[in-house]
Image 1: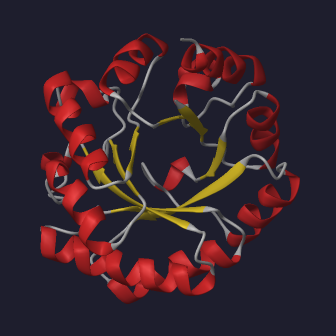
Image 2 (image 1 turned 30 degrees about the horizontal axis):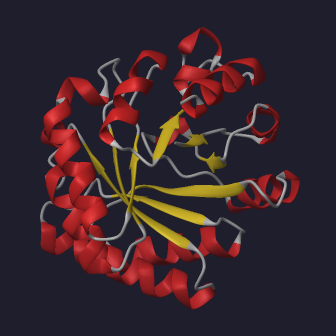
Length: 237
């Protein structure tokens, strides 16, 4: 599995880079599950990240405002992100989600065809009124995205697997793969979840809290040794 680690600043990014993360995912956890950081932070982290490590950037837990979201996504792409992640927080239906993501894809691909776009839904969408997570594969397919992702919207200690069981997640992954897309899973993932993620065929696993001091995504700091340990577990056969 590819390991995505989400630092909030340059010092954390250095820890993630040195720890061997495959993707350095710039976010601001204080602004939500997929909280957006500033363009200059994305740019500075891209500048210090080796070329063989990719940089991802979240553009927020977004509202149903296609123009606003597309402009934010283009800003992240211009700032140097290789992956653009959009949290479909304010979209209530398949139609709204596709409208947002189609425009994001157009805007981002106009900047660089190789930049990858991630449609991110929430396993606990029922708690915030967002689009059904099991619709996300079709949203990604029909809008031209490269990756379909699930995270959790409410960070209260409940995990991805508290909201969707192994069978549903397996079906999610299989559907994503049937469309020729990659699948990413996140949401308070712990080390003990890694075997299950491997078993269901997850391509990309995203974490922050699991590699932070005290396991605290908000007040803890990403540590190199925790990243190394997590990456090692993900890479083992």
